[in-house]
Length: 246
Image (tube, rainbow, N blue to C red; front, side, top):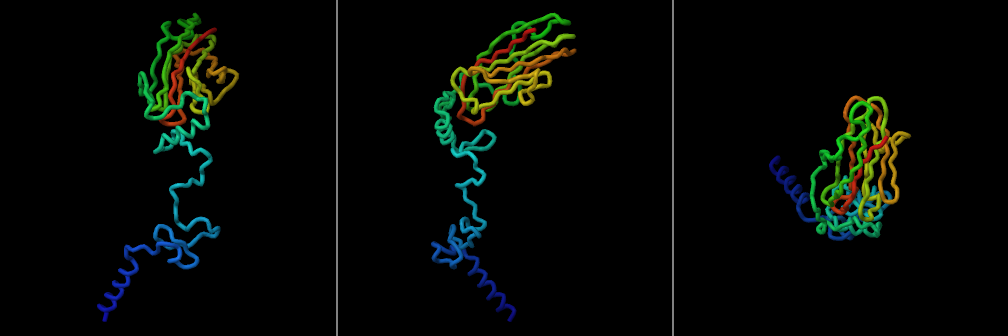
């Protein structure tokens, strides 16, 4: 008797757990159910989305009407990203298709800072309060296949007086500032905490930073970071200029 019951239950379980789909259309389901991927499921209270069904084609948190993916998220279709950005920023010459993106001198400096020589030593003061001004420019490139360029140069603070550091980043083609970010770090300050002693601004197509470097007993550093907001579609040449003055 026990054996017969077990066999019957096993047979019923095979019927209920078979691999055949529950439905092919909603007509195969109960009135309150809908056929989704071969399964009959209940609709939610708003009758808009089957319970426990997730669509890969929608994003309830999408606040970007063009579905453009910033570089801090993964994107499997840079072609659609390029098309959406080109529609939004038609005059930005820094937008490139991924397969057309070629760097003249690729540099992988996302995790470290490349040192740039001034040709006149460290800007600021040579010794004590003796002024040692610098003014030099490097022509560089933001590669589409990279997301961050980082560079630095040395500063030598004066003993008892301050001096002025100025940094200029000038793209050589039109590139909307919404497509990339620039920051400068020196003397414990950066563009996120502007003050009377530290200013960052766009002026006639150039990102301009002015900083008051206070007296100190050790060599300082000026760091510059240029960061693309979108992966594989932003590329442009630019000039990076460092200048110090009294």
